[in-house]
Length: 564
Ligand SMILES: Cc1cc2nc3c(=O)[nH]c(=O)nc-3n(C[C@H](O)[C@H](O)[C@H](O)COP(=O)(O)OP(=O)(O)OC[C@H]3O[C@@H](n4cnc5c(N)ncnc54)[C@H](O)[C@@H]3O)c2cc1C
Image 1 (cartoon, protein in one colour):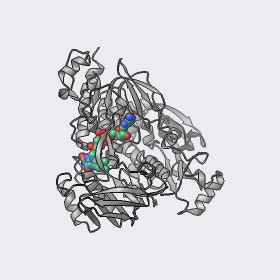
Image 2: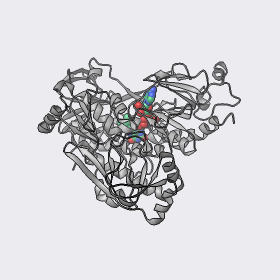
Image 3: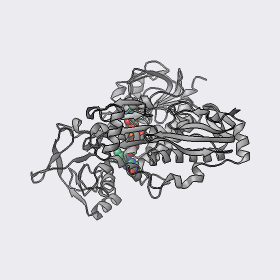
Image 4: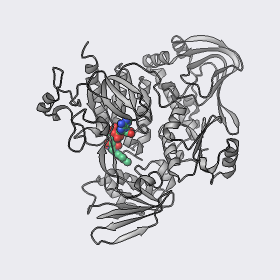
């Protein structure tokens, strides 16, 4: 059983739900699925797909026995054996990711196999089968994460910024991996380092399939290796390109793809956006006990992929050519994508403190989000959170369960204006959370990791220096709109103006060239929409971001078919 940080995310062993994870389909279901594919005989020992293969088929066993295997440091393990009515696949079936398991025929027999398009068609037309299969896929992936099985080992020191960035990336992308800190598992680490001739300077390292090694890679390098950064189904022109895979972008993608449009979504860091860094969202409808941002976004991600959205990550859109349609996006690898309509869902990010050393210490003691990955690093330590909004309140309550003491530093005299009442009450009740009003951090220290900081009480002028190694910065939002240049009208703070907020005179001046007024959410360029936190006047909530993204789909449809 896992002892990793994922225990904080996956509370129950997915393998306890064996019947849901490995369902055996009845004769009616077998017949219905077989109609969408082709059949063939298979021989014992035949590999049906190998670890690392892309675009694997959906395989339904008609007779014989088909096994699923994973390779680990100690050899190969059989995860499950499927007889008639059993099927292969997990959530990679919806993306370009490389398979993390192998499928091998154990006993000769017959299989039905469906390519990706046929598989999606089958799911779309058979809601009951879709539910059974997708539930199984989710549980299978969750199981691999829970048991740290799969194709990837991350070897690195726990408190190194580079290691944290990679852990965060793998975790937020739901990629099963084994994380090894050499000081926790010295024998295992030595064995791996000897096998791959790695020195301490090469860490963090990612070992894939026990064959390929990336020394001190960036998340981009890892994404390229795992097949996350390229479209699975490249097109000359997409109907819709969504920039940013936070709640707003995901909702736009789910709804646009469900309407039959071809959709590509591009994400600069990891799916989920700001919401993906929230430990618990309690005001999102339908989850009375709350839901973690990662759980919510991974469901939406899968839903978007189920409807055919192509998602690439981490790829940043660095420029948009908006003078001609279809619009052209240039990504950070200089790849160009073209789309008839664009959804700007690039959200916002936390403002920085503006202190010397802040960039150097990012992910090495200084964080802009409090997920289970960061929380695990704060076990029994003292932490500081800067900011008085709901995000800081949530983070404080979440971290207080692991940390020895949590200090919240706010510049104002109380929290009433900036934080919801339920959070204030919980903070007041928590014995290990301490509030410091009218206080700000004025210095951070440390070379490889944050070692100390100084804060000042602005009322008394008193300065306090503390050896605290974890600082969470959650102050004010800055829109992610630099890449837009002057393509669309923005408000003085840089947020994008849309719909009825656009001054008519400005539209005339900017040569608005279609015989209608902008739709809800449409910017000063026809066919370019802005939704969620990036939009001027948005309310900065998950539910509203999702609502705006969903609403955009109907207007996207009109724009895409405007010339029909
Ligand atoms: C810690 C925390 C806790 C929160 N808790 C709650 C809560 O409990 N309830 C609530 O309602 N709201 C909460 N919020 C606010 C909520 O998360 C946001 O309102 C919501 O995420 C906005 O969604 P979005 O999709 O508009 O933008 P974002 O979530 O900001 O997503 C934008 C995405 O776009 C990507 N991106 C940016 N630029 C580019 C580019 N050029 N190319 C490609 N990708 C790009 C970013 O990497 C990001 O993933 C919280 C926020 C934080 C930070």
